Length: 465
Image (cartoon, rainbow, N blue to C red):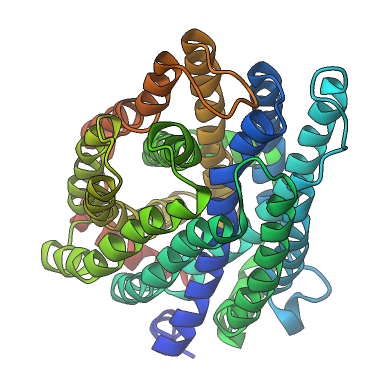
């Protein structure tokens, strides 16, 4: 087979849609965890915010070891690689255990949150780190599959245009499904929602199987390219080289600040519903529907703009600044239906930025391949997962500071006006600051132009990688 033929294998839209269900699963579980994890331990269990925050900080630090290391350890052939592929077995193993481990978050030991605070704190650390280990195995491998399976700019954009709406359905489902079974003040209802999430998660994982299977051309290409390497570099050498690539560093900084915006906003929603709007948990359903309406309807428009401009950086900047500024009103809205309509617009901006993440990172990985003449998507996806999880660190620190300064009372059914103001701040203004800084950095220092991206792809084709 000629090099150009190898690199131009086409995949059906049904196969791309199946890959999208892996995206949906990632967003489905992650959305529910983000929305309810911190809130559950602080407002339902009544654990002190400093212990909840410290537990989340330890969880985020664990990612510093876990995510890139998972990428490194799985970036080599195993006995099963020739038959089952490089990524597929890890997607299934990691995905299944990750789904099952979600329920651990909501079954802490039944002890007093004051006298037994350290026991609950230890469980929080164990449950989140166990959960994250298999989340990393799943995420790193399904994400690393994208630039290797979909090789051309056109196919990547088409695959992303199909997969992104399906992934957004995962976000919305992760926000809509749990509130249907949760009642504020009733801890056992959180276990019920976790069981429902488990069942749905397994079904989504099954739907993703065809899209996450590697074709034999991709498997053989990897095995042949790996076989010519004399020896494998150490993890720390790979880490050092990755951090020397300027565009990767800039992408990661911007992505981390984007995730800080998303996680702060999502984690604020239960607080906003209960303490600002003074409504039941089921009211989150319509709020989350705003994401779906805005994001799904906007994806074709963003993809048309991307194809028309042929400039991934430009489209990401437009969506990113849009997302930053539309976050500001969220701090001032106290009407349920007004918030719903604003979140539709917020979803439009979110859809635009989210749809461009994979193509931009694929451009960065192509540049890496040209510079180093090897494919190491797993390591790069590990770094993306780690730095994206640093958004949890940003959210935890933000909540600790604001809740401490405004007098938020853990486990209370209502809050003071000062505490309510703090909740409004970490729902809109603070996420705006995160995103605005990220886009300024991306605009100034990211320099992969359309011409440079095309040249890199041509070089990758010459290298037959």
